[in-house]
Image (tube, rainbow, N blue to C red; front, side, top):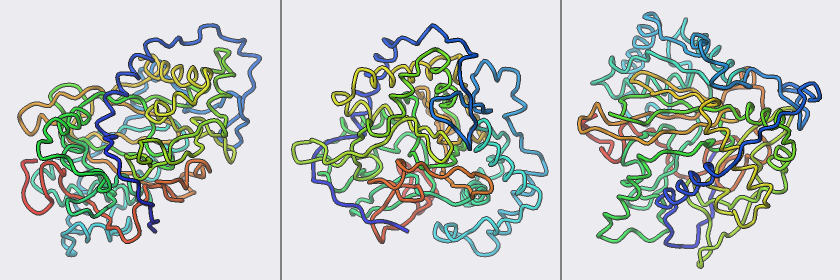
Length: 449
C-alpha cells in the first residue's frame, strides 16, 4: 500500500512558515490582475459534456455554477439530517462500540459494512453521486456533534464511518513524531496548533530551543486566510465537519473550476485556457512529503513534475489549482501562464462566483476536489473552548459506480502521491486516525475539547 519516499537533503527551510509571504504575494497579484471584459458571441462557442469532453469547449454541466446562479436554491445543495438519520447513526455507533471497538487501531479496521445504516446508507450513496457528477459540493447540516460532546470515540466512529460508507479512505496528512517516525493520517484536525506543535519533517534540523518566533509564524498559518486552492490533486471527496466554530471569521468559500474554465472561454480568452491546459508547460517542484519540496543543499529544487491546472483526460476535465506551487517557479513561467494563473484567481475571489458559508457545529462541507476549489477567511478564535475553530477532515475515494471519473494521469502517481491518491508515506509507516488535535492532546488522555 505505502511507497518508499526518498530522503530530502537536509536544508533548514521552513515551507510552512513561508506561507504568509506567499499569501501576501497572492493578495497583491490578485488585486492587480484584470478580469477579461469582452464576451465573445455565445453562439460561436462549441459545447461538450463531462464523460465526452472536447478540449477548449464550454462544458455543459451542473458544475457550471456561480454564487449568483445558486441564490435561492439552497434546498438543492443543503441536506438536513433528519431525526431518523440521527437516531440511526447514533445507534450504529453504539453497536460498533459494543463490539469492542475502543482504540485508533480498532477504528482503522472498520469497513462501511460495520455500520448498521439501512436508511442512511442509500442517502449517503446518492449524495456521493451528486457531489461527484453534478455541482461538485454539498452542505450537510445537523450532524449530531452534540450527541457526542462527551464521547470522542463515538464522534470519530460516526464521522469516519460516514466516510467509509462513501468509499475508500486516503492518507490526507503526513506527520512526524518527536522520535522521528513518519505516520500518515486518514483523519485530520484543523485547528490552531496543527502546524506549530508537530514536527513537519525530521530530515530538517529541529528548531532551536528558543523557537517561539518560529512557532508563532506557524500559528499564524493555522489562523490565516487561505488562497483558493485544490487539495492534493488525486483526491475525490473532501469532507470537513465543524466540531466548534471560531468566535469570528473562518468562513469557508467554494468556487467551481468548471465555471472558471467556461467563463474564460465566454470572455474570449481561449488563449488562457490553452495555457492552463498545456500538459508540458507546468513544471511543479517535486515534493518530499505533503508540505516540503525536495531541495538541494543550496536550497534549489531537486526536480520537477508536469502538472497542469486544467487537465483534459478520459473524456473529463479535472482541475488542480495551487498558487503556492506556481509562486515557487514564477521565474520559469511565461507571461501568458502568469496571466492565466492570476486571472483564474481573480475570478475565484470574485463574490459573484464563490459561495461563502460560516460552518456551524454539525455542518459538514463535502467537496469534489477535481471540480471545486476552496478557501478560508482569516480565523479569530475566542478564549473559550467552544469559540475555537475545530474541524475534522477526511479524504475518501468513491467506487466507479458513484464516481466514474478516473484520476488524471498527471495527478497520480507523483513524488508525494500514491497511484490511487492519498499522500505517500515510507514503507512500514503507521497509519493513524488521531482522536484529538495534536497541539492540545497526545492521544492518550483527556482534552478540553
